[in-house]
Amino acid sequence: MTTSPQFDMRGSCLCGAIAVQITRPPGDMLMCHCSQCRKTAGAPFHCVFPVEADGFKLHDEEHLLREFRSSRDKIRTFCGRCGSPIYSLRDNANSFRVRAGLFEHLDSVDWGGHIFVRDAVGWYHEHDELPRYDALEPGRDSAKSKTLLPDDY
Image (cartoon, rainbow, N blue to C red; front, side, top):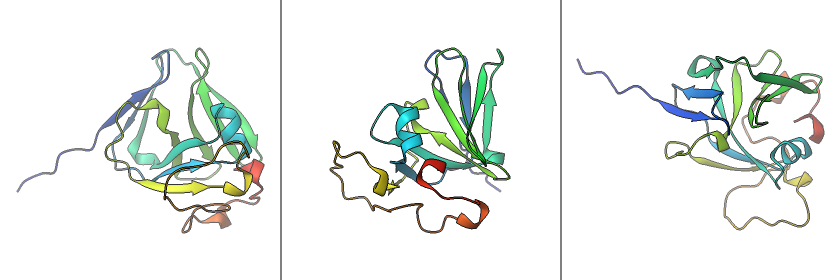
């Protein structure tokens, strides 16, 4: 019997104090244009991908991970030293939305498209052929969230 190689993706915040490890294949990469993602990224969109909880490991020996409750049912985390965004998590969710900028190599992540394009800034225009969705991507269970306002994403 042969065993398949274990999945392993590693990344870190800017200062290196917080490291993340992905041990299961993640979902597709999404470019989120909601106002909260834009503001936390300091850019016209934030690249994120979902990772199931049992495939996500956080290494934070200095206890620098900070949380900010950005919505009634969602937290966003970041490094308390360098400010790098790490992930977002909805209450009672079983997956993290991990920030792609933590990783040097993302060869194993497929591109899924742009979400919340209805909230996109007017001064930036995408130049790709990926799908664009006014709100959440198809198949995402929005029933788990009580509110789906653009700023609540």
